[in-house]
Length: 170
Image (tube, rainbow, N blue to C red; front, side, top):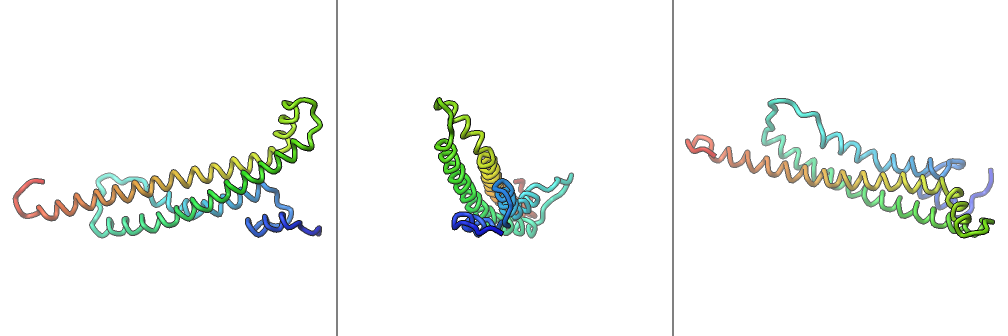
């Protein structure tokens, strides 16, 4: 087996990838690793609604606690997704610059076209990383909205309990 350069070893250490795994596959694996905890968050945030289901105060407290936990998971996923995008962008920029320098095209348009063709894998890896980041951002907004909605529901239940038995309408 060939020796890895320091840069290759840093990528192996960063992504936990195995020798022989391509850049696109490495980014896909890392995006999946980052996405696994937030996929659990998504499934908890978006259960299929049941007709006539009423939440108990205990369920609302549980939902608020869970939203707090989910916010921490999503924050970590946002950080890791941002790092993945940054790393993929740097690798693409480096590969693009090297491809431009190595191109034998006569015009700048031809050299740019050669560089784009030569860096398709890096661009795909960057696209995958950006999708992972956008997904994490969307889920972060959903977690925030879920916490807000649960607090509103809890306030309504608290008010109903306060008025219960007084003969007044809410």
